Amino acid sequence: MVRPLDPRLLQRARAARRYVVLTAGLGLASALAIVAQALLVAWLLGGLVTHGSVPGTTAVRALGGLGVVVAVRAVVAWAQERYAQKAAAQTVAELRSQVVTHAVALGPRWATGARQAEVATLATRGLDDLEPYLVRYLPSLLLTALVTPAVLVVLLGLDWVSFVVCLVTLPLVPLFMWLVGVMTQGTSERRLGVVQRLGAQVLDLLAGLPTLRAFGRESGPGARVRALGEASKKATVSTLRVAFLSGMVLELLTTLSVAVVAVAVGLRLVDGGMSLTTGLAVIMLAPEVYLPLRAVGAQFHASTDGLAAASSAFAVLETPAGSDAEGVLAPDSSVRALVLDGVSVRAGERGIDAPSSLSARIVFGSGVAGAGRVVVLRGPSGSGKSTAVQVMLGLLRPDAGQVFLEVSGPGGSGADRVALQDLDISWWWRQVAWVPQRPAIAPGRLRDVVTGGLDVDDAALDAAASTTGLDSVVRTLADGWGTRVGLGGVGLSVGQRQRVALTAALLAGADRPVVVLDEPTAHLDAAGEQVVLDTVRAWRDAGLTVVVVAHRESLVALADQVVDVAARSLEGVGA
Image (cartoon, one colour):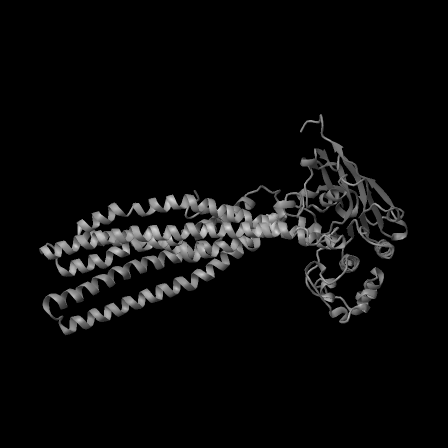
């Protein structure tokens, strides 16, 4: 069973720590106000009933004090609600940022397939379940730890019999909460799992929808998505049913406990064994003993949903990732070459190394007459070409071998080798323009998408668009460069998206010595392939080093260096 307050939440989210401290202070103020209100009301009513009146000056003071107490309770409730919403939003934002950042640090090999969809679901909808936990459940839990003991101490001073009754019946509430919680936890985890599977199906469907539509199969996965939607609805209804039943059970239990106290007080009032003022105070304070626990029980489903989401987030955050070292490259050093030394990456589910023992030295900017170089990674499908690119970029660490950068020594003479894993990876990424197989295209105006926030004048933009053939696309669009593009390039064809990505890389590559293209001609016709070839030539003529993953001979024919990539079966090879 999950703990009601996971300490990892306080360790990971600074907003949660501040919120707990604030809530504890508000809870203490609320406990004092509750006790003061009960005693003042009991004193006033007891005096009126017993003596027929209360001295005017004393009554005015008591009523004034009661007004202050009521105001304090109102301010406490207002502050709790206001800062609860704010802290919940900040905590969810902190955890969401940490999950996304850590998932990126874990690399693309970790975040693949169903796991990628699970992380996406968790970072978007899943962590939203923490909001009701922080806004409703956690304040009730802290009030239970503060208000209930304070009221019990006051009851002990007023009437030890009522104190004993409350003390005996109080443990029944958490006992029933535990029994209900065992049921609720399972339904909450099943619900989160169903939602994650539904998210995975929908993401896969959206990613493959252009292909499915091309073959007339776009309606095929609909039945599976509907089935998962029904499963999600049933899991949610099951969780709510248990939550409502738990609330009813706890309400009945606490009501009976308060009734026992009230009956005992009434009998002793009739017998004359207790003063009316004391009896009224006890009757008003007895419900306050159970009220925080009743609130905890009513919101218990929020705790299980929220902590289930938090546990999933912590599972991602606690997955070990390679540590990023501080940059050791001197500011005036220049990179001469990238060296792959016996690099192998294990593809566990396939039982192979892909690539296997890959060694190559890629020299930067040493072509003929000051031109750059084109380096082609060649090999059959599944040999690990794209994986080798991820290793070069520092997105993936090899299972064997090393990746080095050769940098200029002091005064520009000689060369030193620096392991890529020892560098500040963000510095290396600033040296590389990368166009993956599926370019990431942000939503917005076409010009903003292509420039990526860079300050690019019209002449440079038109020149880059002319090189990649994007200018002809822009001319066909009604709003030209002002055309709105959806997330992932929605509104553009596959070929047009490729031209957008190439143009963006061409503009970014002006300040970056290395350009990496992963299968840039895949799914392109002859005209689109020619655009890619012209762009690669333009980069080379500009003195850049272009690393290309390629199958087609037209790209291989441009190469100044060809690196053959091969996989190897692990049968009979020790781990």
